[in-house]
Image 1 (cartoon, one colour):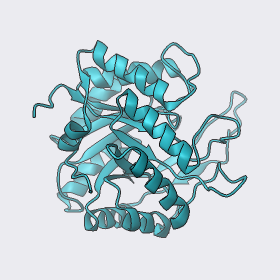
Image 2: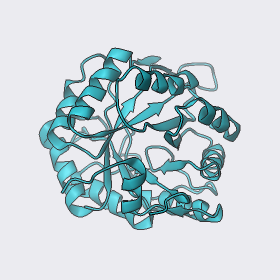
Image 3: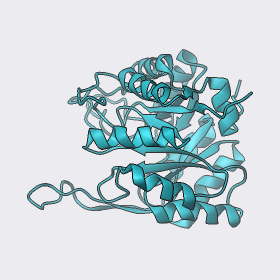
Image 4: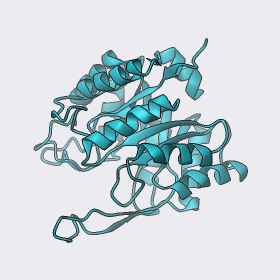
Length: 294
């Protein structure tokens, strides 16, 4: 099939620590499935899933509990069987036993592989830290641990890149034999201490990534206009794209989105305005080299 004009649309339906008591974020298996269905019906073919604790009052905290994660994964797979399942793996520190166990138990189609470290910072207008400065540490040995378990379980890695040096590092991982196949890169832009959401940066990143790699933009941050401007440029340059309530709460016109489906609908509208089309599940599998599990 000819997929040259197709865009793989990913929806990140919920984030890491945002309080679902203050924002309309899905947490429970039922809510996660409904959010995935909304995104799929509007044109998303990949769901990127974080997992929140299902214990009462703990819904803003991540979980790697196999029972809790299993309930969410099972509900999404049953409710939206066509969707490509992309599992988050992000975790600070060297102990990856939680996400590793989930990867082995549930074997998602894809999984995030954070490809380098980042000082995760945000500053308030008064110069004070918005939160205690933290290191999201992803040294090479940790990256390799994740790639080893993904390779062993037939999971396609999605390399999340927070800086230009991390983009270039993926090519080194490939040259070193740390993974096989065509790499899939996500340019994460808009994090205040990472790469800015700027369309003119994309051509540099494309030039620095491994040859023939697939790529998408993950645009986040407070500036909704820069978020959507960068996503449009990504599509015009031939990339794939991601949206969802993990990344932004705002539509291109500045209105607050009430659900993930509205964000995907807006992204698909931009895709069609540029003369491209969202990929079908079958086309997305071909583009990403995924064999859906029966």
